[in-house]
Image: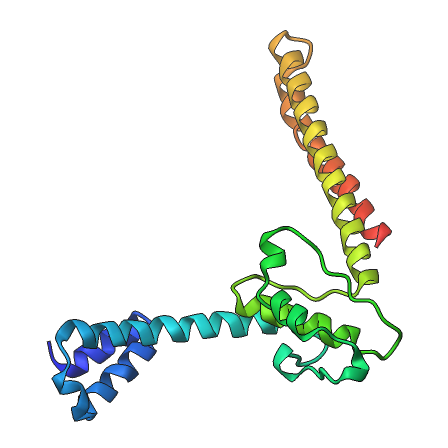
Length: 202
């Protein structure tokens, strides 16, 4: 296989970092003293590291934080009363694995949003999927989700009962086959009408 064909296949496999690291190895003579396994390990490690960094960046971007924040940039001056040890410990995200919550309390302008965003960024760096919501918007979203689930369950029950009754009536001859076939469109209309309630309740 030619070097160009190898590069093309690496691109096809979306291993761009692997390809760039391979080019660096080929151009730098210091890698010549390494074994094949060591050089391959460096290539794979570079690709994995870059993919991990890309995943973290996508997670932080999709979290919709209101500002760029990090625990490293926090002001730990005595006037703020922040416990550096506790903040850095929480930044390890062990509280998430323990299924605990964090409440950030303080007066307006004291930096609660910044601290919450910094904890969120730290969680994203530790491999957790993060979303930033203001409490009012979150409660509204949860209410919509509950109403949606209620409508979905109602539609499922209605469809099941309607179909079972329709099939039973048709099987015992109480409903002509042509009429039974035509009646199959009614559940769709019922589901549409029931689902339309969500639009009116937004």
